[in-house]
Each structure stands twice: as C-alpha cells, then as structure tokens.
Length: 270
Image (cartoon, rainbow, N blue to C red):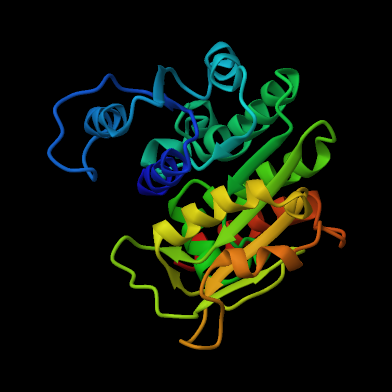
C-alpha cells in the first residue's frame, strides 16, 4: 500500500537494500496508487536496490525467504476484507484475507521466521485499539472482520516473543492528501493515549524507518499523532531520543473478549 511505498522510498534514499514481498507480478503502471501488479511494477522501477519476492504472508516458506539475511523487518500490511453475509454460516477466519490471518497470524509468523534468520528487529504498524466499546472501534471491528481486535492480538504476540525486538507504531488516520503543518508531530511511548488525528502516510513511514536507528525504541509501543501547528515537533527524529521501552502491563486476552462482546452488542443495536 501507500505506507509501504513511502517506507521503501525512504530506505532507498538512505542507501539500503530492500526486499519486498508482493502477491502480483509487475505490470504496466499508470501511477503509484493503482492495482497490485501496478504497485509491483512501481517498486521494481524505483531502484536496482529493491528486490521483489513473489509470495504471501500465509506461506511460511515465502516469509523465511523474505527475511533471509535481513537486519530488520517492516510489517506495514493490513487486512482489507469486509464482513460478508456468508460469514453468518461459514468460518470467515478460514479466508486467507481475514484480519485474523493478516493482522495477527502473519505478524506472528514474520517475527518467528525473522528470529530464526538472526534478524533482531521488527516494526509493526497497527492503530489505537484499547477501547473496544468506543463507537469507532465497534464500527471498524463490525465491518472489518475485527481488524482492530486482531491487530491488538498481533501486538500481544510480538510482546510475548522474547527472541526479537519489536517497535509497534500506532498512528492516527493516515491519508495521502493530509498536509503536515510545521512543528505538529507528537509521539507517546508505552502505548500512551494521544487524541486521534490525521497524519500523512509519509510521516508514519518516516517514523517506521527512523526507529531502526534508535536502540531505545526497541520493545516499545509508540502512539504517533499530529497536534496543532507549533505545539509539536518538526520531525519524529526530534522525539525518538526520549522514547523508552514499554513499562506498563498491557491488556491481555480480556481485551479480545471485550471486543467480540462489543461487536455483538453493537451489531444488535444497529
């Protein structure tokens, strides 16, 4: 998606070699906001330092090849499947595009394979998700096959994996057209609570790349938002030196159970 492309651009600009897992062979590209084949072509044409690997996150072999020889993994993917009528009688989680597979199981697989390959760092983008009864959490989970619920479960698995250092980034509402005002970036470690705000893909991608240069951001959960002009920082690089690893006890399985209850109640109300 757009977030991944912005991250690849920044890595290439820094002289890094990048390997991208893509599900489609490259095809003619009209612009960088197109279909899967067009995105693959855009990545292929970006730089000789970008290597494309055909495969899917559900394939352990493809994931093992993806992380081979890597210093860090950026898990910037997210589920896009919407709830279907057939989910009432079929096991929706059996669909490889379901949020459980994409936002949770795939993240767990990435982390485990990376650790096996000697890669010690993974950056995962999720979102604010510790308020299962909020209107927007219920709506997103109801329509998006519990996308928030499984994002948080993916976070839990990362925190439980002691063989790899994670940085979890919880951004605001990402938009390509969002204009970043001067001195407006805000960052809270330990999964701190910041007011949800709009934030450009490029700013979040930059943060995901920048954290790799800060050992203090390892095993940290960062909430990344924007604030009014002049009340924040000009760049996340100004804020990262003060980041500390997670210190609090994050919610456990009770959050997943609460999310499912909230959707049942919210669905009945609607």
